Image 1: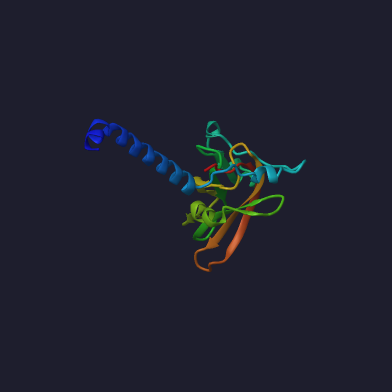
Image 2: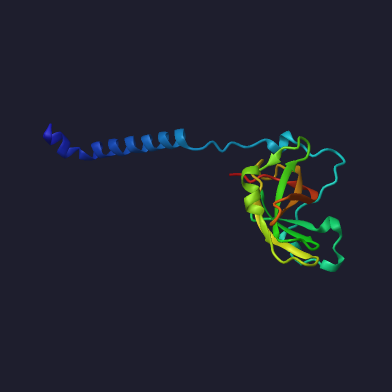
Length: 183
């Protein structure tokens, strides 16, 4: 027996390595998160005739002329580095100290999107904002529902929380075509 093992040690080594590889593959398959394609966008098609904006691209990076901004342009959205990742800018008249943040809702069923993470990611402090101008400039946030290239309509709302009274007020809303971040 001893001479067999000493002559054929490599067979035992290969058997152990194959066993380890099979174990690691099986364990990884059983415990890995299931990143199956989300059908959120497919299940929420954009209604015919709905007017919406499309997020800008980085090539649209020129800063707007603040004096000529229309109220509908106070909120501006840009595509980020991947689908579902966005940046937003927000312009507004004078506000007391507090904070501005976003809330997003799918348009057809009014489903709140990324509720557990969106407020924190999109919150910007408002300090000494005495005249019309930028409050938020290119702050990043993520919409998790859906997949890349699976577009649906989202109502993006801008909210203000007064620093003194803690009262929350919706400042504006705008509908955009978005896609989710594929994890």
